[in-house]
Length: 226
Image (cartoon, rainbow, N blue to C red; front, side, top):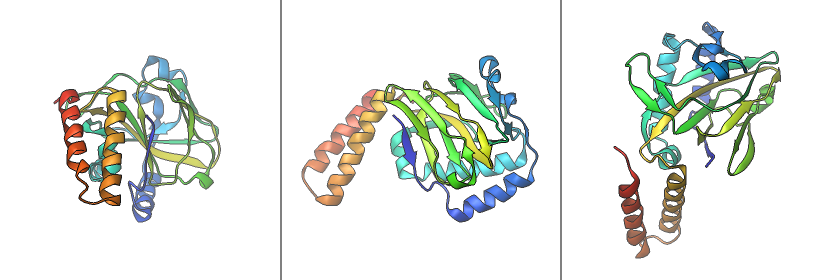
């Protein structure tokens, strides 16, 4: 399941975020890579202890927790504090799979990485290359979204970022642990949720809405991990 989450941030928020990100200090992106990923990772990143990263990360988590598409698709239980990266001058990130578990340095809490998220701060016309390429059972998808939009995909997916040959690709990336571990189950719940919303919009008060909502919550009850 690969889901685009539109307009997580407004254009004004993106502008403000970019101003703060462009003005702060960047470090080598290998700092958060595992052994294998470090061999193919070439980008810049904000330190997890950078106060700008902490401030902007809180705003991102708040925005996502209030975004109906994200909540419906992810069913988030724990969200790793958002990190920030930058690709420019030919930088790229080769094929890799994200670590299965991440530790939040500030709290010592562990997060199982069910889903990966990339939130874009650069519009597609600001840079050449830099596509996020995700390979999974649904095929290979190339992703390059408007600033303020996010992409949500299984952390089990093989993925890479193509070299940025002009301009700069600035984004936030992070992971989350879902209340529903299985990507297949999350996909079924999302499809059912979307169908219920469409039925409610097209045929308000249809008697099947209550029945289908009951099915949704009974499936969720079977699969949820709290």
